Image 1 (cartoon, rainbow, N blue to C red):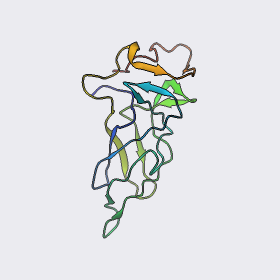
Image 2: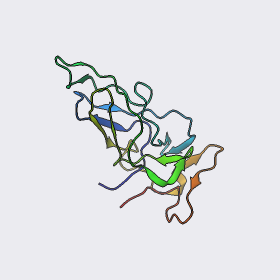
Image 3: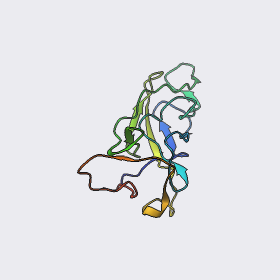
Image 4: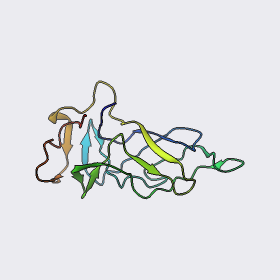
Length: 144
């Protein structure tokens, strides 16, 4: 699987959760890809960005999941949204509540509509920060 930017609606899974979850990206970064808001590595707040994964297997008997995360590990360091790296589908975050590893099962971009050309990236009155010397443009999907 190649690396892709993650957008609102991405499908998530937790090693200790009993059900899949989804990512909600609030419009604070004001950048859209495939008509959905693009995420950065700070989009990991429980119940705001990350919906619960049903129940947590670490508890016996299992109790309701309460995702508690600090920051996604990884990110596209040469594409910054609000000063932080854009989130990639290969990034992971550890849940501080139960210790589960949360990963991205699907980027949320959708099948044939994945944002691989400049016409699908919308910036809403913002400047995208790009580090000097970076080869990729903010408009292309990062693939290996």
